[in-house]
Image 1 (cartoon, helix red, strand yellow):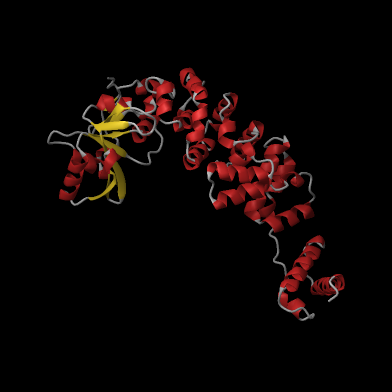
Image 2 (tube, helix red, strand yellow; image 1 turned 90 degrees about the vertical axis):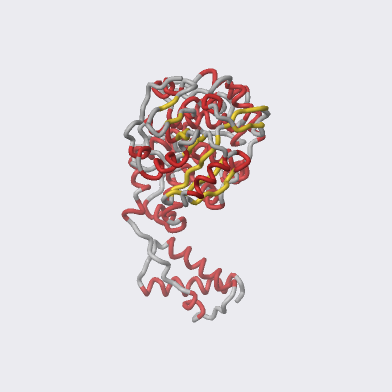
Length: 418
């Protein structure tokens, strides 16, 4: 075991809610440590979100101590040894140490234990298997500290076995490398992912969606996606052609404009060329309705945005609205082959900042006054008048609007023999 690293004095560990939970669970023959992502992130010196705790105490003892201290406890997974404690409004997942008795995929039979090394060895990657005690001492049973120093993502033990336990670890391997790794992927892990790729088909769409969207916004997404493509891993996940150069361009454009990475923009650049692609991705990844609508809008004739003059651009913005307009422009820009500094696309993406579309000034009352009754015909003539108004360049003068209303009403009546 390597005990060279220390988080002594870390405020998140030695004070506040975390320190209170550790103090509650330590003593009387039991030990508790912070494990997993919080330790990893602290050592990488990046923000910590969730704080998970492992303990030698059985779940019933965790609940007993929490109740005695007046701490709210929720039995979120007692069969797996997990109790959630709520301290100062912050949730802590507390899980009893476990060790595998029989291993067969995600339904491995486990038993509660007291062996910190055995618990660490059943986790996925070395950098996720570190633990830190209440004094700030980091415990490493699997070589995680060396891998953090090297920024290397490596499976614990045999990569093939780790993957067979849960095929989602294939995606997690690339996602963690994109977020924390540097240089080439760990070769043994990469080859194991390729060998196990058929197992991806057994995963739920919801789990795949979660990992893919996290992967796409990681700093190293470009290289990770390229490696997945080279290894034949993208097709079983996305089910269609991918466009890695467009993804790379989208990432460059986001960074040049100082934008926060957007998973839908990046997914659209990678895998959406037409609206049918959006619907396929929606089904394969079980996207939300809002995410599906975003991809569908992005993929709808994005190629028509190239080479537009100002008035045509304004019409597109009016029709799409600012959010949909920007999303579609971003996709068209990424697919255009032009760089992030291209003047045309910079000017187009900036249109909503320099021009606000006026509201269509003609109303239903204007056509009711011209003899139209409420109903479908009224809606149709309003839509036709709006098209004429857009083609005329958004005029707001009363005489022009009167002419548009008169001519549209007459044309509609003639065409429909009203």
